[in-house]
Length: 75
Image 1: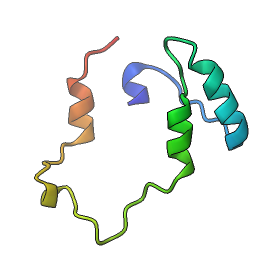
Image 2: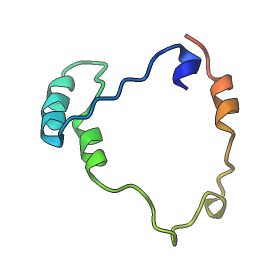
Image 3: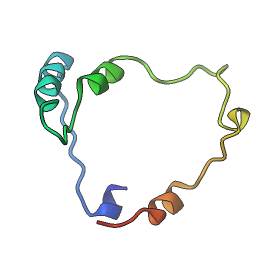
């Protein structure tokens, strides 16, 4: 996806306390790069256990990521 929009990835490892403080400040900006809700979601484990229904069980048809990205409008 990053290559499709012509940007580089930026990964910064920061402690949750600092991330939460920054997110609180960022929420005053209309295009916040990080919100408090996102920090709270990152704190928890979001990997499902094997007994959770899969996409097919839920009636969701998977799509190829490459094809989906190609359908996106370019900037």
